[in-house]
Image (tube, rainbow, N blue to C red; front, side, top):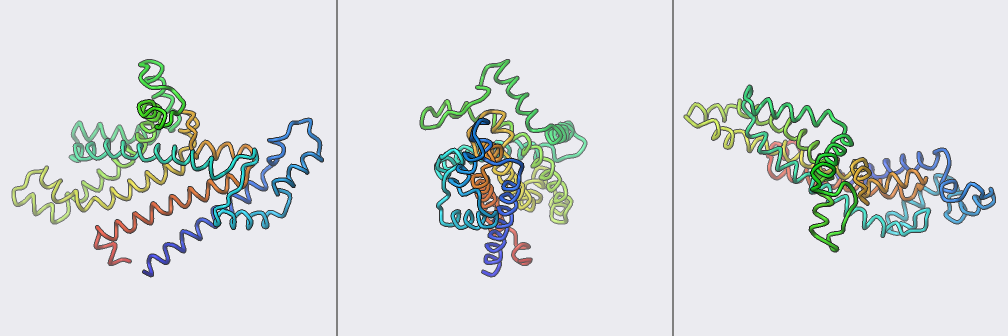
Length: 312
């Protein structure tokens, strides 16, 4: 119970610090939303009237406290262009969540078989897996996205290069519109999971229990599945949670390349329009989602790993 209480307090503290930093930086950036919304011909009086209408002319700390209280109460207000923040985030966050979940599931489907097949060092599979990990950990995500668009859209014509179709409109169209973005994200996560999970498998194959299985006549595959896989699962769960968290928090580049109406591209728009309230709300929700993911991970590790229970 004490551990849970401390975790909740740490989440609240993280949300407060992150939102404060983002809000202050956004509020003190060069220019404001008035210069973005109003035309160049608009005079200073029009800009002052606009700032007063959206309450952006008060002290920064007062505006931040008002924003924080509004976020907690669920009254998020409107963007600088007059749209409801709750409505626009509600739609776009669903796009980002679906993209993140699909990318992580694809990464799991790629990385686990690759890690199991290539666990023996010096084999062709080992060299291929190592090359795969190094390649996609080194290439920037936007280059991977452009390459996939070139091959699968421009050359083969299998998937649309950009855009998003809601599943309520066409389930097939939705699947085709999210395949390339999710696959692009999954390659980076698969490379990371393969690199670390394979290392954990190899280390556990050298532990006393695995060595005893091998001495008793078990095959290498049996030693891998019975002696190395289970102790490596906490590492795998941590990697999966980290991949999901990073997908939610860092999908802006992929969403921008593929023109997806997700939360990442919305954050870019909010930053360009100097919308401190919208930016702060997005950051708060993202930080909350990431904190919840890691909190769930801690619970899972406490259940499956006795060492975690003793340490806590």
